[in-house]
Image (cartoon, rainbow, N blue to C red; front, side, top):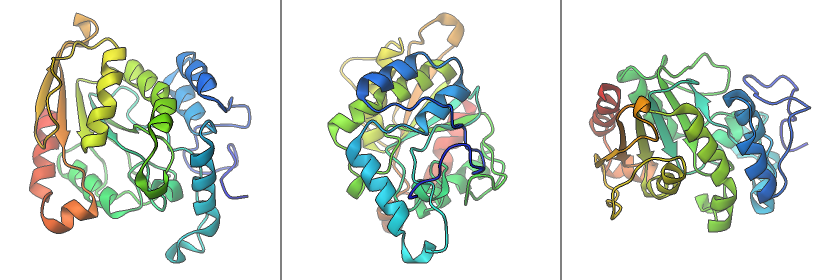
Length: 263
């Protein structure tokens, strides 16, 4: 089998054999909207099969594997939101990497981008360890949570608009459930993806939409006054292209997450 079946002992697997599986966009919307808890929401995310191209790709990658990981079992399923169930900071990315999260079972884990991200989160007090190598390695987030706009690893790291829209209810319901004080968008795609989710969740947004940029801050009107002030912050993605060229440095990442923690 080219993926880890739910309930078979993978560390931190949120799903069981009885977790309902979405196989169409309509089922995604229904299962997301009627998830009774954040735990059940993440469980349902982790077994979704609503996008045939993404299902085929993530499972092919898990079956063929990269040479360096030939002796490892790949997760091969969607990567659910992970971290604090009541976070003040929500970190939003594009999608898991084929040999990163799709292998390790945890978002932003197992590739160079994740190495940079978790090291910065640790330095700024938002993570318990400086590294994240695999689900169940003892890592935990402190007052923070991570989600991806698209939960499955896409070919060439490029989900289609239809795949993004199919996955949207998972993102929306997670945002509604956790009510963060700060949202950090990693990269322009995440910036574009979180905007309609914020609107659908009831946040008041400025018009026109501010352009994405590193350190750009947008104050948001929360759905209710009790939610308190909310801020959206843009952050360049710590991709190898950005870190190798110096477009993103450790100091730049630390500044973003220090600011997020301060807010």
